[in-house]
Amino acid sequence: MSGKPTVLVDPAFRKMDEIFSAADLRQLPEIVDVIWGKSEPMPLDDAVEALTSADAVVCATWRYGEILRKAKNLRAILTVSGAFPSELDYDYCFGNGIRVLSAAPAFGRQVAEMALGLAIASAREIVIGHQAMQNGDEKYLHAGNIGTFNLYNKPVGFIGYGGLAHCLRPLLTPFGCRVATYDPWLGARYLQRQGVTAMPLEELMATSQVIFVLATPSNENRALLNRALLERIQPGAALVLISRAHVVDFDALTELLHAGRLRAAIDVFPQEPLDPEHPIRSAPNVILSAHRAGTVKEALWEIGEMVLDDLQAIANGTPPRRLQQAEPELVPRYASNRAPRRKERPGFV
Image (cartoon, rainbow, N blue to C red):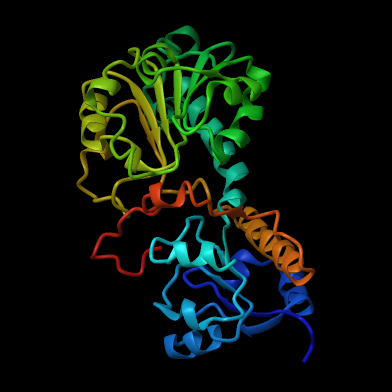
């Protein structure tokens, strides 16, 4: 016996070299005894058998059924998908000292960077200007800036103040934006100490020049931004949809964009890949991105860094600190974090 924890490393749909740098791949077996450690899924029967003696498992989803009660050594489930798996028996985990950890924090900085870029591109009509140049009908100087605006000193609204918002807020500091936040899971005193102002959702929608949708999908916020709330957005203001389409009435948003009511930048969609015939593709004043905000190669290696740091903590008998830990008060309220896949593209991830 090596004395190191035994860990089932079964990260599919993620690839090993997608989430672990070469250096971290070399270090992984120095920290733990690795079972499997391949990009393709471990055969299910073998994985279930391995879990009966493993100290921890690194996985993308929980596909192992009811094995928890036989996994007598299991101390931690480290998920690398960015979401807490909906198939897991959390009551059993909480009651038996099994930590459930998510790699969601690894996506914060890269998604925040993209959110800022989309906001500026929308405000300054960068994509529209580029397309006009390619079409040969560009307008120069003032004539090309009618309807654009600066981000500096503008009122900005955050819907949700979790990990993404914590990463985005510092990026807005140089612009002097006044940030208002709607997050029913957080108190006004806490938000004030973060340097933002708690605000009712109706007021935030009506007064913000840029609105960032950053909320974690929950059972309570499906289509939270309904037509009535979307219609409160100021003409010409920008909605940046960067967390999940779950939070928005997407049909209403599409119709309002076609009506020229607002501008938007969208990285996530109700179903992915997006239907080639979806009317959002032809909407004016919209920037579309194919769910690219959180998949930058070197940024994904932060997942592996966090996993190794927390596996080392577990090996040392100390609490994991890097990954997000599931909390009994919130887990029952989370909704699925991934958009449905279109059936004609079963291999899409």
